[in-house]
Amino acid sequence: MDIFLQQLANGLTIGSMFALVALGYTMVYGVMRLINFAHGDMVAASAFVGLTIYTHVTGQATSLAAVVAIFLLSAVVMAVLGVVLERVAYRPLREAPRLSAVVSALGASLVIQNGIMLIWGPRMRIFPELVPQVYWDFGGVVISLIQVIILVLSLVLMIALYLFVEKTRIGAAIRASSIDQDAARLMGINVNSIIALIFIIGSSLGAVGGLFIGLYYRGITFNMGWQYGLYAFVAAIIGGIGNIPGAMLGGMLLGLFNAFIAGYVSSTWADAFTFILLIVILIIRPTGILGERVAEKV
Amino acid sequence: MSNDVLFEIKDLEVSYGAIAAIKGISLKVHKGEIVAILGANGAGKTTTMRTISQLLKAKAGSIRFKEHELTNLPAHKIVKLGISHSPEGRRVFGILTVEENLTLGAFSQSKLDRKTLAWVYDLFPRLQERRKQLAGTLSGGEQQMLAIGRALMSNPEMVLLDEPSLGIAPILVKAIFKQIKEIAKSGVTVLLVEQNAKAALKLADRGYVLDVGKIALSGTSAELLASEKVQEAYLGKKN
Image (tube, rainbow over the protein chains, first blue to last red):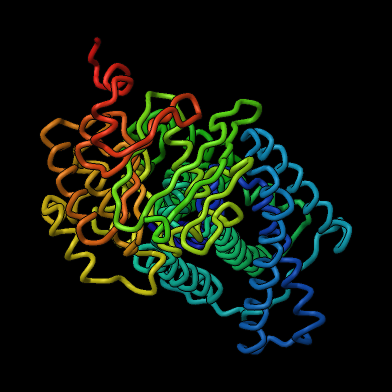
């Protein structure tokens, strides 16, 4: 029982990080039908950007205000980079065959990954201890302050995003653009602005995810975006790519699954089982758990 | 008549890559008119409509609406000027509700005009009954009503209706055409594209017949209905 509760807590923590990153994949796919393979590397970059802001901007302070500033600044930097990425790597290929954009995405991924290596070096860097090491022991189940922060902040961000997309005018424009771009234009929606907005939201949520990865795992490497990006991508597909609640659900499920495999089977097998899970879900439900069910009418 | 021209196309040419779809057409629409563009499949009707809305870009020629030249504008700015477009195939947002679709129709407005919404529900009571239903679950005719209603939500001066009768039960076609007349009566100018020439000419004041990218014939509806050429080609009468 102890293992179960412990892995439940760990699973929810990593699940919320997967979910935050998965939202970036799923939102871009929803509007552009494009897998932004560079997203994982953007997430990695954000951890390094956060590190640099900590050392050079906020003066290695760990006060609450300094930590909030690191999160906000990193999110802004990554949002700007996200918009640049879309302009440079994807917009020129908007009318090109879809495969060209996929190749461009892979290229952008390599450019960002190597960019991180050039700027911050190829060796593992240690992410600063921004949150005090506070632990609570509930009869053998240990939960850290970092875990609580990650879970709560992720949930808040996800609920805020959900409400924004479902309840606001701009949210409706995002949904319309993801269904039919030409019809959205006829409504007066500037689809280019919506796409830029999607990259702003996705990249800043990814930035928070990247900082969480740094806080939780401490060691950050230039190529870690590949691993976390892949997990988040799988989470998005499990939930039903293009579907926002699906990405949240997929992330949480994947985190829990991973934690339980690590707890009950073996942590070295967690990756293998993750992909077995993906294959099984895709066989049962090719569109993912919450994937679009309404058939396209011609 | 000529000084109340609301909308004018001059020498418009549109191509898809190397293939010319519209080979220099000119037409005028006066304020308050219902004008029909007729023609067979592939004549260029929908291409013309999509070019007016700037979803397609003209290769040459001009499209003027009041004092605005449309050809250099991005598509999303057109509706704000007062032209809205109910596209071919309806293109309703299937996984959104009827009401969400109508609200999106008013996206170009600073806020949703309740009076317009009430008017649309008045024109098509079926939409009000189904306002919480997903648009994709409506019948073809109801989706057409929704597409037209959505186009009206921006309070347009001119509405483009592309094949409102396409694939719809005849009884609903009649109902929809009756409401198009109502829409025109309320002061909205209507530019209509139809394959169903007879029904369209009964409704319209004037018409243009498009044939492989050129205007083959134009005139008042009465003239066109009486013309042998139209009768032969579009109304299925021989000799």
